[in-house]
Image (cartoon, rainbow, N blue to C red; front, side, top):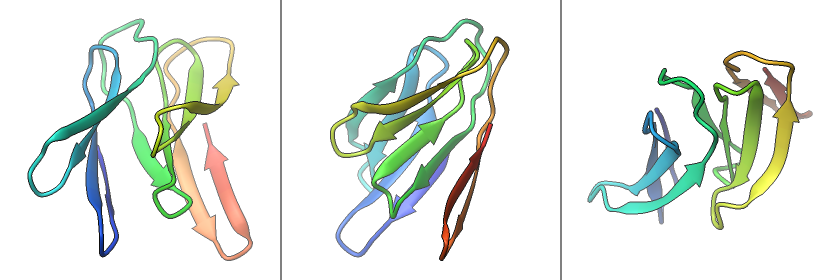
Length: 101
């Protein structure tokens, strides 16, 4: 689960254990969209936001991690690994962004 807040918009992102990550508006919890990933096994995945909420980043159970455009749901980048569940950590500094899978 991850959350993002700006003055004009707030969202909560929850791994749904079925087909990806659901985006909900906050505080009314209206479902906005699903960021679809391949779910090979049913287990929790890590979800984060980056670039001031413009990206949604999540691991996956098929060996990949994904970066999505938060506004459109489009995949910006798929980081493919050999196999296994991927977990993501995000570190944001003034010099840039580091994503570790």
